[in-house]
Length: 125
Image 1 (cartoon, rainbow, N blue to C red):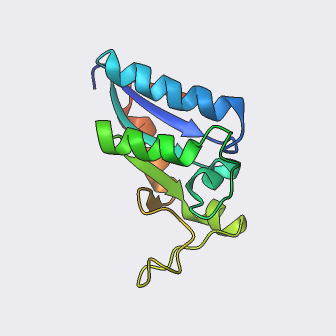
Image 2 (spheres, helix red, strand yellow):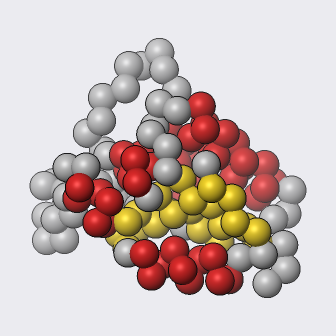
């Protein structure tokens, strides 16, 4: 459990704190910290909405989360209960019907407990 970090994101995609979370993950990984996961909870689940329309001249948070996952293998966990309360659905048998981007792993609060118990540091934004 050396030099490990877990993040909890509870802010909406258009929030400056969400941008800070993305920058924190990138800086941590690039400085040798192992980011064991990012857990999206409360309004933070909206970061996973694949049909959310953000104007092209604004910061594209979903693309940034996808890039962090692709480039660094940072696991992205999504609280399904919080997501469903905000109108997001996970259609396991039909990705076209799902409103959650497939880069996110649908999970529950148990995953949050697991992350916080394994991480040396936990940051919530």
